[in-house]
Length: 166
Image 1 (cartoon, rainbow, N blue to C red):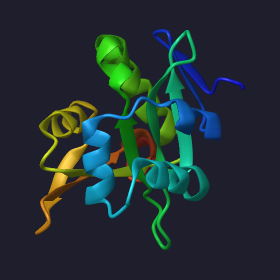
Image 2 (cartoon, helix red, strand yellow):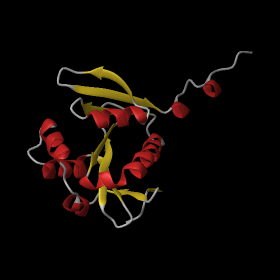
Image 3 (cartoon, one colour):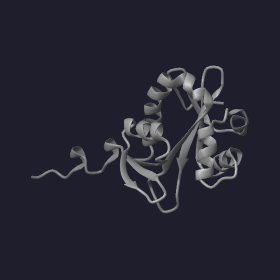
């Protein structure tokens, strides 16, 4: 399977059924699946595989560290980014944290605006989103924080794209 990205010993590859079978599920994943309305993590991952632009982050030994990707909702040009960290992610903390910036930059190549929706029950994920440059824009009644991140290089109204005065 060809690598899409290779940063700090972590590789981004298209998600495949084998990655779903091999991921080491965490309590947080189970909780997240329930919050999102799935009966199991298996059901959630199968949905991601079929319905989203999905990827696996693997280490040098092909261990699944993260399942991530973009959910494209109808009628919007700004996909929702998601990430599900396996139990192995704790062993890769520093390199994973730093490589996540490259992941967001990769997604921004094609999508000038990215969104994330994170439950307020996951403070680490909220901090991670902020560190990645996502800005909180709304806190909904269900306890989810909505984030947005814009790629300034693709914004049409940057100085070099603005009309010049003659």
